[in-house]
Length: 230
Image (tube, rainbow, N blue to C red):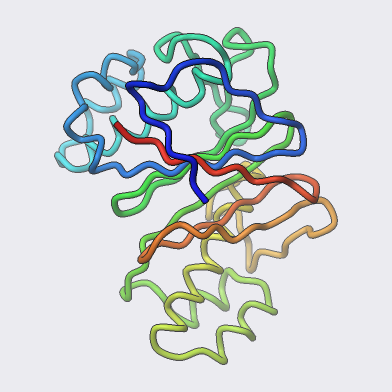
């Protein structure tokens, strides 16, 4: 399912078709031995933010997530990772500065536990979310507060492990969708109602212990999976 690409041998330019979405999976812990080389990709603003992180594991994950984003994007933009410039739109959603490329590349990133996930598309807004499955978050109260009515009804039929896994799948759909819209969780309102007419939601098959979802404008997309490693 996932096409494995190795950083050290990863050369050449990648293209994403207008009807495609590229989803990248990265094990953050596998990148920890390469933190020193990854740090050279970070901008001054990113290094400044890094300096404010005091918990070592959070620092390491930040380096991996942001440097890997730059590395991935560099192969679509045909520039070196350190030359990529980011900005934010009026809603705070991270975007590429126009000077980085004339291509309308849209992207999203998410990380949880030991996994980072990235989505890339051309011209179409997208959002991606990954969650490490754990038992301390799922509750029917949260589901009723944020999820669409049909998903709340579905979750009421589940118990035990099935409920926990189902909860996180619904959670990632919601997160991916509101990220694609450029909203934070606070912007989800009473409950998220998906615009199925203009958006597609895909459940992603990642690996045991993790669930993920992708939201993207339009319909009938071809999803191409990549697994990046050293």
